[in-house]
Length: 343
Image 1 (tube, helix red, strand yellow):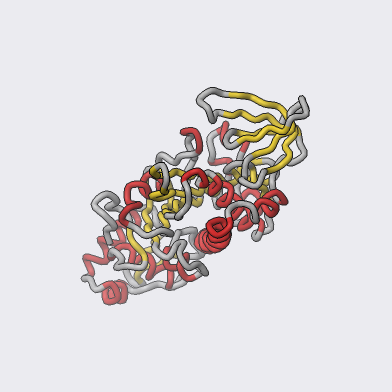
Image 2: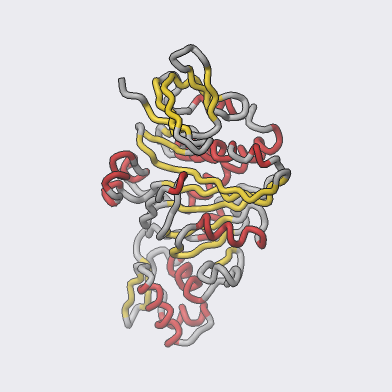
């Protein structure tokens, strides 16, 4: 189903699936068993040539469909493929992910979400197998090889625009808690990263559309290095990154992981909407990276780069960073990049 004139390659779930995807999910649900050409045609409501044409399209898209003249088609083994209905069946949310837009490849789910935000309800999830122009903070590129998690949520919170930056921290906390449930020692790196063993495993990018006194929408982009080895990442990225695959030595079900992330995020998001950051801050500080350590802050909030050395003390009640400077003064930061200072 076409979601709009802008995003022609996305399918919408729940909704009417294109025949190609209907066949794909049929094969995935058959759990390694062959489906005959006739069975596929009958279930999809198409003729034999139509079945073969759609199977060819799936093969062209890179899906591992095994075909034989006599037995039909199957997708063998446990394949690492996003499956919107599988995400949906593991959701415990009221709002987040109740509408899913999925595509095989796009430039950036954040860009796409911004284009269609006005026409879709809050909580709509956009996700894909790979991005060609993934984005991080400050215009940095987010490497998006197949096997990662790349998603964007359209949120429409009734809050003042000044409170929106805190959402990056809330999303980062939800991501870290989700990764901890896998047995990973995940920490929140202010303001929008998640680290495991000092290396970046996930990142958050929030983009806002607002007037002076109201928020139209917020796009929360979350990228997770899931089933992709850092050996497939470019050299400079590889040196400071890690992945679930590298840390655990095995693949995870990305569908279940996305659902778990949305379940966690919604709980913290609702708390944030109800009472602000104050009740979340003590919990976030418990799993916050670099607290008590010497750090360097590169602050670009005012258009120029300010560098400050100090000891990271934690967060204030608004989620701003607190750093003890060498003068004994506690300095507060609303934006910036934090890194450990090597003695």
